[in-house]
Image (cartoon, rainbow, N blue to C red; front, side, top):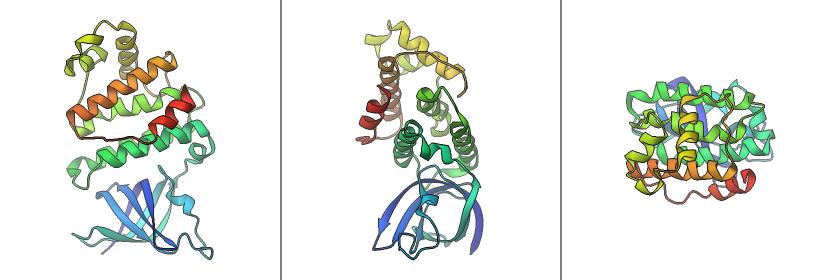
Length: 229
């Protein structure tokens, strides 16, 4: 059937000579894969830029239950996030977070996908508009996403205790930094060195992996460290 919905691009893969298979988290159905024919052809009238990670799209698609790859008919932006692609720091964070999401999101997200879609959409629009506090966005994002994967922590101490990491319980700077991130929004300044941010990120990623799924190698992590060191 033909369906209209909104979606957030997670990633795409090249398919054959001129097409792509794009992974999109949709408002109505959760995570889905779509075939987009001819988008990479020199004769294509549409830009592949529509399918950059974190593009916010309004979609018309042919949805068939139990089919692994759906057909995308029409697409346009429902909100623009062009600053993300024009700013190398923002683009690096998007690259990292889209890789994390591609590992965390499943096709069986359940009834929570509408709330998760709203969270992702609002976060991306906010991130696109940020003029400062960019360097902490991925930490905010990962901590605020915890409830959507069945987890939550009240503060930095609770996060460390849940991991039974007694060796770093006395790292008060790390505890205070993570607690400040948890209790603030994306726009509020939370000061910390690059080394402290990386230590916090390592702890958060370990928390995800310990409680949810195997994240495996995160290829974009090295680039993130290089840009924000």
